[in-house]
Amino acid sequence: MTEFECRLCGKCCMNAGDALIEIDRKLNSREYLCRQKIVGGTFRARVEERFLDAFRETSERDANPSWCPFLRPMPGRKGKYICTIHNTRPPICRSYICCSMRIYDSSGEEAGKVKGRRSLVTEDPALRQCWEEEVAPLAIDDDNAWKKEVAAILDHAGYRVEAYE
Figure 1 (cartoon, helix red, strand yellow):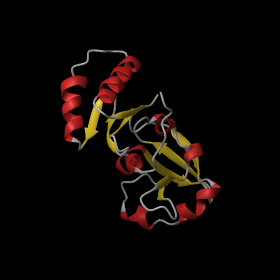
Figure 2: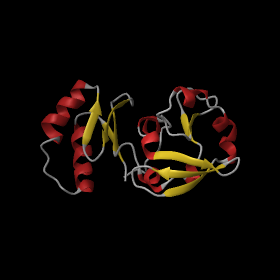
Figure 3: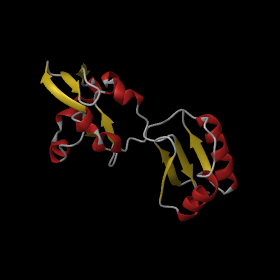
Figure 4: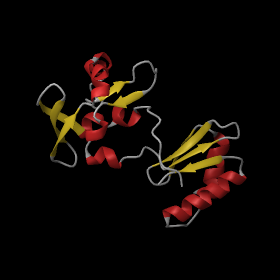
């Protein structure tokens, strides 16, 4: 299996950010004492030196108060976002992977992805049909064995799969 690679879309931090992290207080120009809202406890966040300029630019964050307070647009890369505290992010953020599998069509374009344990997200009708007819009925409990079987099924249907650990 392939190691997960973040695409910097920011959607995870846009959709769950303020539900997970709240800044309790500023400790100095780069450090903050934060609260983990769901799991409880506090952690110390340090804005990385390389992201200080991006962190100081708050216009997009101000317009989207539900975002994580440390998410910022990546300078010079439209549609890409960065975690300005990546090295000191809390355990809940460290353990999150937005998908366990990405599925590509024959032209190499992303056709869908598997979120959570086994939920397909796609706009591709052929992929949806293949999934419903051949993948959904699989009765394999072991996740690694299931991913291998899904990859074989989708490969046979003309798709390429990247499965993540």
